[in-house]
Length: 177
Image (cartoon, rainbow, N blue to C red):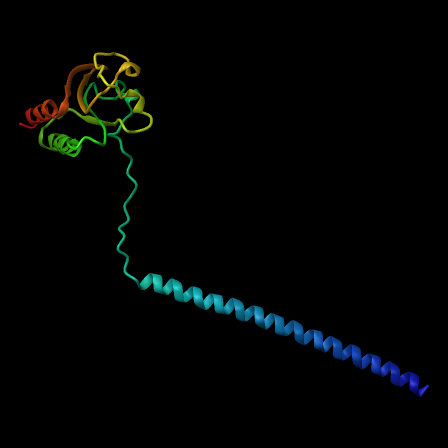
């Protein structure tokens, strides 16, 4: 009987040691995972702190809705009774000068007539570019532009047109005097 008790006590000791061994492995695993999280946390703090201390050269700007750019299909449906429309392509080197003159006109002249821009390079406006201009129309789907054009629209009708650099510049100069 003595042998049987010794075998039972050896089995108990083995199961106690094996559960202690498994417990040690579990604790070791928890420590390793905690260290890994700790290392990533410290690295993250270091990177975030470094980003905050570096001077930023970027300036943040608010998004601005552009009310002055319109589509050709909306050329006759603007709110004021009378307005100018400058239709242009990006390859015209004088476009910025025209825009500056219109902005100056709006600031310098009391009760100035509002103005809008049509960017003909826009994919929604490209179908309105043609070899020959067609400006004497009442429907926006029929209008065609061959070059940069300044239009004066009153009550949904084109009342005057100015095509090309000399005509547009001349009109803009007369408007600001």
